[in-house]
Image 1 (cartoon, rainbow, N blue to C red):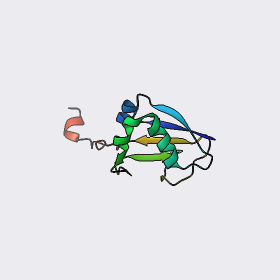
Image 2: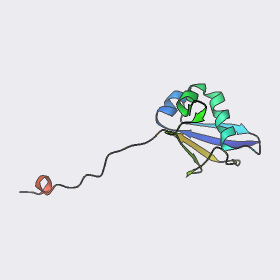
Image 3: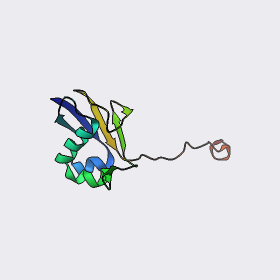
Image 4: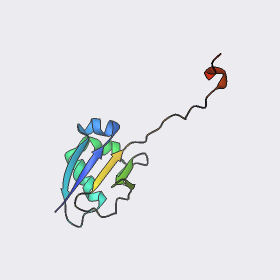
Amino acid sequence: MTTVRWRLFADLAEVAGERETAVTVADDATVEDALDALLDNHDGLRTRVFDDGVLADHVNLLRNGADTSLSEEVSDGDELALFPPVSGGCVPTPNPDRTERR
């Protein structure tokens, strides 16, 4: 058996009630199998992660810190991460009229 650790972020962690959890899957399991195991334990996540049975475009899925696909095989000790889109502002450009001392 293979054990992988899930890390959940933002509202996904809130829905699951935890930020990290481990799941056990078969030795030849894929990311999709590990995701199914996660959702079996946290059914409330299912509607946040899937749109009509397909992984939602707005959900980011990583394996060991890199983008992954559902068909990629997992290995014992892998870290999988699931998070919604993250947005932010831009880096402000200093305005000399506002930052210059007079």
